[in-house]
Length: 307
Image (cartoon, rainbow, N blue to C red):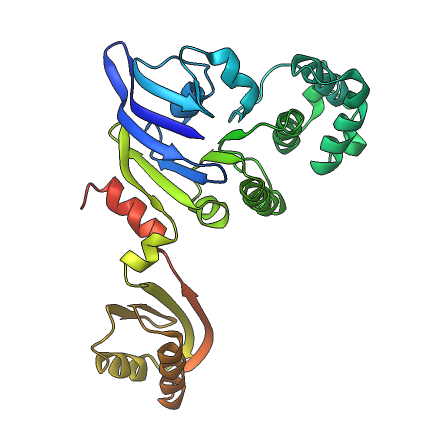
């Protein structure tokens, strides 16, 4: 669906993207990560044919996005990070304008607008001026506009940054559903939770290219299912310290007055036995949580320049 080969982009002889190569199939959902200024937004704009690269090639559904952008644009749904303009238009007028721009059949426009407004929970606001919308409502409107022409490729730039927790959860479900429909999604985000909740691939930009480009399902296997255990306690720190010192199979652990933090590769049955042993040793356990912070660890490893 998307094939990028040796992509480079420089501004005033300063390289931003360098020799970037990757491929996405229909249904793939790529989480595009990287520090601010790493080129995430720039890459989306280049694929959307809004900016020409300095060199390299881009194909979208078999079309050359550089030499034939008119063939590519109808296939793409681009949701930018910021929403500007159109303040005096109502939501309905805005969508009618884009229905015409997308050349939707006139007989289908009204029903299509109603459908996308209901999908984005904006049906009750269709007469409201865009200038009076909140940031979250504007983001939902931009998504509604993108749905109208049913693009094959979705380019989403930080779509959850202004959404409330419910909206963030709904966005993750939406991205997963797009993948199930065979759409290809590139999600530029600074929220690692977005990546793990919605995507099947991750690419971390650094120095103009991917320092990491891998399937999310492959990372825990490569790391040996390493995870972190967070245990909140009320009493028994000395007993916990002594017990954990006697378990050499732990990667690391730290005991404070109110918490125990453990890095391990234990199976669930071994974790259950550990909790039982802590309680039998007199440790008052209030709360337990198992989390896999492998993506956060991976991102920090890249940011620090480690192998």
